Image 1 (tube, helix red, strand yellow):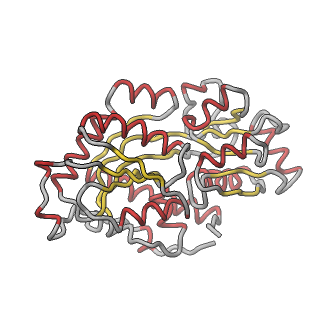
Image 2: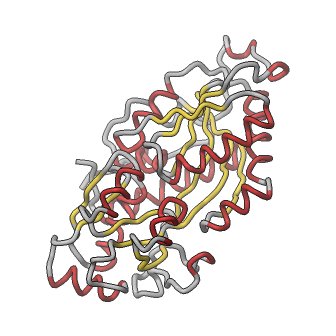
Image 3: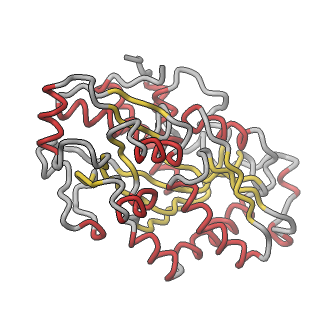
Length: 328
């Protein structure tokens, strides 16, 4: 189990302030944007983060009259894509479509190729989404209680896939093991898409996934749903109980999606981006898309987003420490 210092989980507003570097200070939103914007997704194509980024990117492109280029950079629990953004010019033309692992990485990795507290400027939170526990149809368990009984009868005989070490699906599985008192084998992939492919193929038995990335597989009968990770049931799967209802005390795992820019991005450009992204997620078609998959639009800008991330870092630190999860 990794040990965590208070410094690691302290996420100060000052460290994440909207500072402006001397060179970037000369920039202005008056003619922004005047070229394509790169939106880095730190996962492989096909996963929930990628799907949402493409939906939002298309609408943002229509509003800004510029191409939004989705740049998938998977690997190392999102740290490869995140590091690429940290090293990018702070001119507003390279952004991170940041998922929850932006917070998790700070407490599960002993060393990162960037300084999460100094290298980024928060733009806006966009949405939160619950997960569902899905299984291959061949699994001889159709409820959480049956799954727990099976796992206890055959320790380490069942495996769960994830989008990578240190990702939310990974820690959702570790938290499940902790709360259910079972032993499962974790199989990490470079993104949700590849993980789902192998789950459907029967190479793994279980996965914690967002509804948006497995909806088609569930509808086709290639996966079955056992439970939801949120405190409340998901409208799209109203007959599916939550893990709390299934006996797992205090089980509440939800992901979030937001936009983060390199530190020093001019405040006027950050404000423009925050306004435009917020406008996009308020569009009826985007809200409908989110709602149908259990996601909820939640906009928090600037300091409010900073505070949100800080609280999330602290929460994940507690889960990682209690479960003993590692990225080895």
